[in-house]
Amino acid sequence: MKNKLFTYEWKVSELPGGCTPVVFGDDIALHDGKGDGLGELYDEVGYYETTLSRDFSLSCKLLESERAYYGVALSTGIMLRDGVNGDDAMIYFGLGPDGEYHIIRRASIGEPSVELPLGRFSQTQYRFMKLSRTRGRILCAVSRDGENYETAADIEDSLPPTVHVGFTSAFKSVYGSVTLS
Image 1: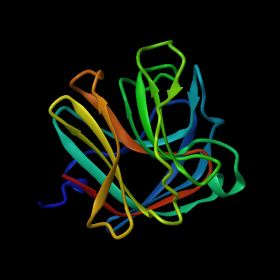
Image 2: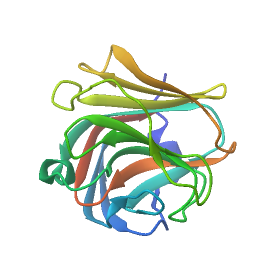
Image 3: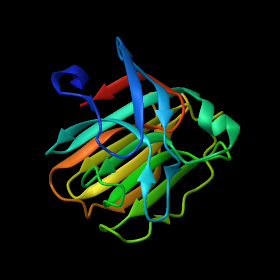
Image 4: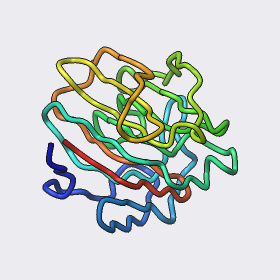
């Protein structure tokens, strides 16, 4: 399937936080990420996003995550959001301060976010991640080689048809081999 990454308008989100994106080829670097990361009730993080109203699959190779290395916040990954207010419904799939993949979900506006159970997948072993929205399901998967993915979670999709989709950073994060199909 052809990579549709650049057929969509990508922008720095209005979500509280901020970042400076640099795009080269199919790689995205988010510099100067600001914010405290993903919180229980409120998110403040750099977010480089586009808006989609259909099923999709977004994948990448995680090349660098300074924030995760410093062990400070959940902030380096792929996120779906209902909106760009800090307390909107969302699903985050990415790294935690322990170097493992995590899933954080806020079911509706203003509710506390919760961490969903997830098997142990280390970023040092699984460099590729993918988040897909298909027929009412959100699939989170990881891969060692970018070809063969293992499902980390299969979540019922409770978000509206149109969502904000993108990459997060509260410091500096580099995503390589980004594909959107």
